[in-house]
Image (tube, rainbow, N blue to C red; front, side, top):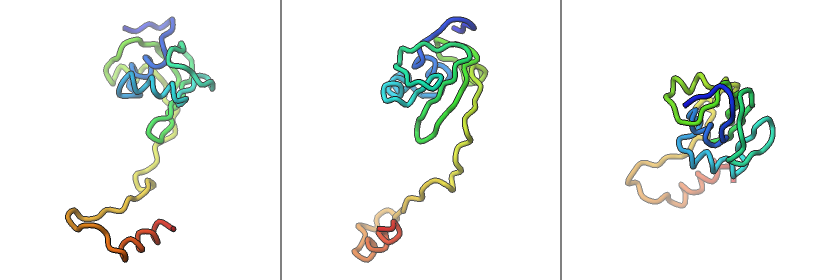
Length: 124
């Protein structure tokens, strides 16, 4: 399950420590160039070792972690938290997220006046 020495695939490790929900999501992030190990873009089969810095961009947020324990199988959340040192910046507050306009259900399509007001709010 865990080995303090040796290596494992970076996509498998990201999934094992619960940074992504699925292994295929970790694999896709590697293929898309959203994963860096020690500053270098990596392929999914790249080996990760103890002490490596892994940067993962996912869902508009960057996670920066340092590998403290190499895993090859998925573990519980409490054990996973002990397998890396999290140096990520804090997530932005919910208030800072973009506000999306919301219409009440069943009110139909916006009128021309409503559309002009929406465009004015968006700055178009």
